[in-house]
Each structure stands twice: as structure tokens, then as C-alpha cells.
Length: 81
Image 1 (tube, rainbow, N blue to C red):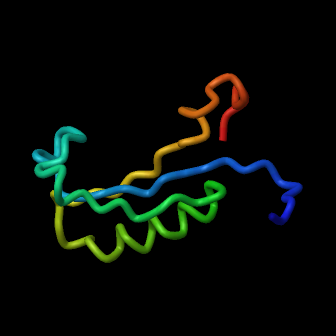
Image 2 (image 1 turned 60 degrees about the vertical axis):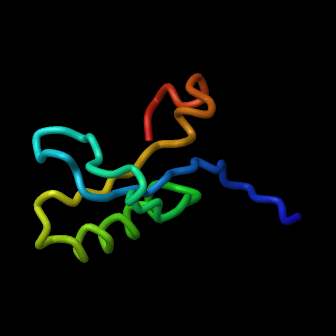
């Protein structure tokens, strides 16, 4: 397994149709698009932008970047990112 010198800060890109544009509740959890997990914010943002652009005509559809590294190890990232 290859060693990495850069700290891995996992990010998840997820999206789908929302029940309402006023919240973040998905209309149908079976239809949520789990795009993927990325090693850093920059990579996740690139994919997020592409997915958001593909659904620009659907006001009910939103994509999000979830900071998985903050969920997995909340004490390791006090400074943010």
C-alpha cells in the first residue's frame, strides 16, 4: 500500500431532490445520489460543481459536500477545512 504524506481529509458528495427548497430533507431517500468520497475538499468541490451544473434546471435538486473527516475525528480539525 502506497504511503501518503498529505493528511487525508475525506469528503462525501451527495445530492438529490429535496422535499422543499426551504430545507434539506430529501424527497425520497431511495433516490439519493451518493456521488462519491474524495480525499480533500478541492476534489469534492470539483465534482460537486459538475453535479450541481447538471441539475441547474431543477430547483428542487441540490448537492452537498459532507466533511466526513469531521464526523470521523471531530477533535482533529479544530482549525477548520
